[in-house]
Length: 159
Image 1 (cartoon, rainbow, N blue to C red):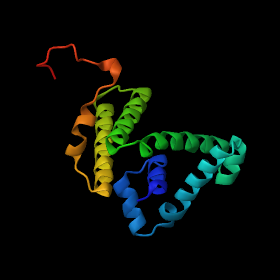
Image 2: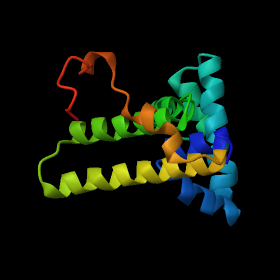
Image 3: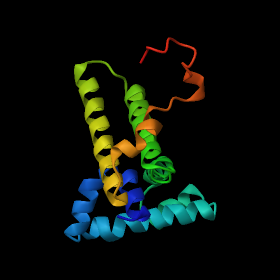
Image 4: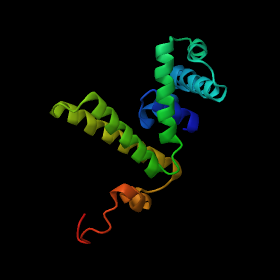
C-alpha cells in the first residue's frame, strides 16, 4: 500500500492488513472513495478551506467533515512518522489516549485497549513487511524513552 492508502486506513480506523485485503478484491470504497476523501481533506488543508466547504466537497455534514479532518491529522502523525517504530509508538499513544478519554472503567475496557494494541502490533508487522525489515532492527528505538522519563541515574540492574 502507498501513503495515500495508509492514510485512508488510519483515518477510517482500518488495520493495514484489512485495508490491503479490501484493495485485493478491488472494493471501490477502499480503492477509490476513501482515498479520494483523503485527497480532498489534504487539499482543504493546503488551501485553508472552511469546514463548510470541506463538508460540501466530501458530500457530508460539517460534523462528519470535522471528525474526518481530525482523524486525518492523527493519521498523519502515524503514517508520516520517520520509522515504523515511531509509527507504532504514535499509534499506541493515540490508542491509549482514546481509551483514557473514553474511560477505563472495567476489565472489558482494558481488554478492548489490549485488542487495539494488538492491532497496532499487526500494523507494525505490515509496515515492516513493506520494507522487508525485521522487528529486531528497531529494538533499540522501541526501547528509547522520552527525555522526561530518563532513568539513566537509576540502578543499572533495573528494567
